Amino acid sequence: MENQFKKIKVAILGVGNCASSLVQGVEYYTVFSEKKSGLMADDIGGYKAGNIEFVCGFDIDERKIGLPLKQAIFAKPNCAIVLNPDVRSEAPVYRSPVIDGVSPLMANYPPDNRFIIKENLKPTDLLASPGAHDAAFVQELRQEIIRHLKDHEAEVLINYLPVGSQLATEFYAEICLELGISLVNCIPVFIASNPEWEQKFIDAGIPIIGDDMRSQFGASILSQMLQELAFERGHHVRAHIQRNVGGNTDFLNMEDKNRLKSKKISKENVIRAQNDIRGISTEDSFLHAGPSEYIAYYGDNKVANFRLELEGFMGAPVFLDAQLSVQDSPNSAGVVIDAIRYVYVARELGLVGALRGPSASTQKTPPEQMMFSDALYECHALAKRELTESTRRQLMQTA
Image (cartoon, rainbow, N blue to C red; front, side, top):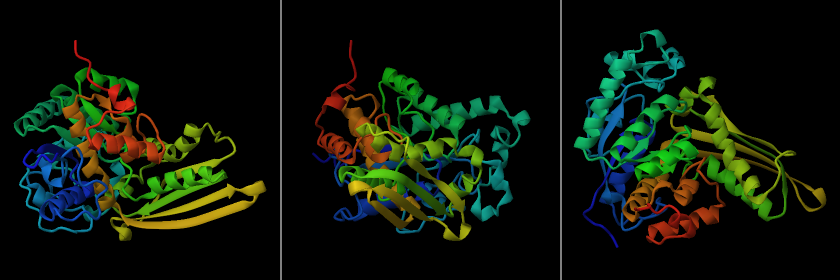
């Protein structure tokens, strides 16, 4: 079933830490094709890591624009651990309008820790100087981006914009609709999970995955599994608290609390969903999840702390305190490498709209929350190109 020579042409929006790990990883598993450790799925619908080809990237940082990916992914402020320095991708990184993609708060931090907006893109920054925002230039850049995507024949766009980039995400979502490109939305701007946006992609005949990537073995999937375990073992969850600390640009960006509303909703959705699926009220449960603090020293290392307070047999108290420490960006890449292939197989099968199983498996706020085993079933079926009750409903309707 392997499509050895066929390429999945992918464009990256935001050439940051997550993009760095993803590009490194795709080339690593392409060169060392016999290695399976670290991958959730080696083969999805006949596609392996070597079938993914990054064709271009888009960014606003003067240290990345104009460089090939093999250089841009290692440029500051990126701090992701370098696990594969031998990246060969010559895919160009083009400029992008800023819109609402950069928090003004970042200007207070050292250049090596923050974004540096390319000078000629500053008029596109809606947040820094709303009065000087050049809407005409943004539209000029839109046409430029469309030309690049067409020239490179991009089929999938990965959204790695900073948390809170609502308008910038919608800007690129509209471009995807116009060009027939599938979107893998890795941030908590609700597109795949928003019925109105999903309908636009259905009408355009495009499958998408979203919203807000959940890491391969990260805080969100661990919270989900702990919540599932508590319920399956007959316990009541009195409190489930998840707190996160890190030192990359994602955590720095989230120091701006004005950008956090959707992120907090998305992270808590992971926990609350397990109550909703089972019809268990959350009225007497305290649920909290969210980024807590930026500490530059941590770099791309993310530390998550968990506190669960449960009631077991006859109300007997059970307490769990745990800590998880991971390299944040490789943890992300281990999921996105699958999401790319799931959405591409869906394109070939004629599926449209937000993919339920792959979104539930790879994202914090999918259009339909699932138990872990149900999401896994949907993913495994799609990987074998088998339709399920869910995917049959998403087959493109032809006149």
